[in-house]
Image: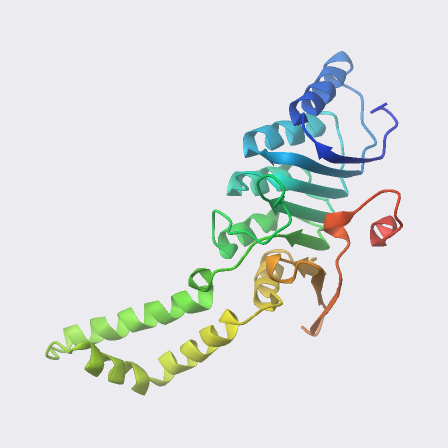
Length: 256
């Protein structure tokens, strides 16, 4: 079956290890075989660890599979290594959708293990990625712009200590903060980013590391994705990635 299979959608799947073993066995029998599989979506009944998922991806890579579309719903860990391995095994992938979750909550927005910019760095390994979606729930404390505010405040406090300024109480220190033009600018930017309900700033961050990215969807806009144009304008459009079904025509059929 795998020798001719091009698109595979496993809904409410349980035994990912069995799928891995099947590909490994076929590759062992004939190490020159190339599986034509291009589209793969796995929706699991419960969350699977990164180790299990990476073993599957490695088995596909060993079988010379060249995925164009990968959708994984039900990740337990979703660490940086998983992203690195996907980029290593399938650098020419066109569309990627990853959803972290446990039990029946895989598609709900959830906190992930690392801040957005650490995941974004992994995207330098993709050469043709056009669409990406995940269910990351952004916390304001994880936004890069807010970190810049903290760094600027720390810098001001260091400057005050080196100029032998007497110890200021919190109220006086806040007055100094409010009078610093650069800090005010950074604070206003962080305030706007906190209410970035469409994920535009996160999309911009990922585009820095992956210039080929055209659309982006996160847990703050589960049913839409941000479209990124050359002039930087972004709007919303329906997001079919997480719900791709081979029997339902959608934009995935237009994959080049």
